[in-house]
Length: 460
Image (cartoon, rainbow, N blue to C red; front, side, top):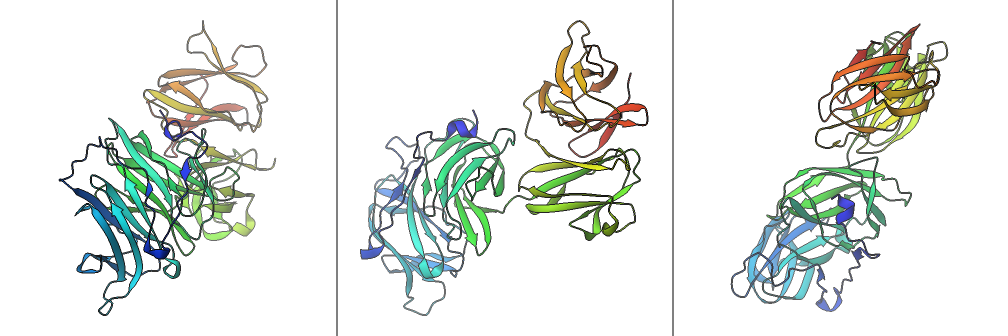
């Protein structure tokens, strides 16, 4: 089961929240715990916690019904309390600046709220201080089921308009999670498998995430509120865990690696947007780099002979619009005088599955025409992997069992390989780019591994 399959699939997957703060009243919104929830409450009790998401507000104290001492003291932006127990009843919560002269004036009154026993609530202060608002969410603390997590998204970023939220963990299969999410919207809970996710925010409705966030591995049993927040121009996520701890997730960087596959070019330096010093120095033919991290955005990469400035570049690749959370490979190929060319491709580094590898073929051998590529480990049962592959073509990724393979290149369309290459054993989990390259009359393969290292395979 993937994330998209677990999200609510009806047309309205977000519930609009209406705030009724005038007349000192407020509507409780959210998705509540049923009577059969597995969290145990003492007789007549409920649980409530608070989170501070107003970026320009000071640290705050929180009073219940204006009664000192404060129930919460010195709560900072981005922080949350743990749950505290209260008796069932009606409460007004008064939020004041920490350290204000007594009696401290409230900057926000939440309530009166009728809080029910055997329920768990999260009170959220958000928006800019001059327009500070509140949400009260009902938390679902019931079991997530074996191997699962429960999460929901809440849009509390006043500087961000309507967004669509995507699961882009597998870049070959992006999946929309929530559509037309407005400021103040509260998402339906989703129960999804535990694991690491890359979440993309599309702010201009073009189905391409403009910001991506990497969660890291989320342990099974986690119950999360995920708030979209901004502090001026900076947009980020605040993840609130069940115990009240929070983690800030900033937009993921973009990652780019470079590989030198031009057989007649010298070792090269690579500059970003023409700015010294070079990001890559003295990269020789057949070698690649590991991934370099950059902020998401548009970049041009300038390739110069080692020791020469970007103004004397022999190849400029770009501008390339590189997305946060995405991985890219930039290849310099073809003969230097042909002239040399650049090829940029997005990499899919998601898990290929137990016992599998992910691999694709890229044809950058200028002396070789159109080819068909076969798997011929079993000569009695050859398997066609790619057909009619031309110079400059990038093959689709293939998911294959981890094994030894014999790869055959048919250069004259007679279904008989003219060149064959033995890979040797490929470990499970490997993610490979396999480049067809030639140097004068010698044709070989350069295998690029996920860490950027390379290996040459000569014909057998």
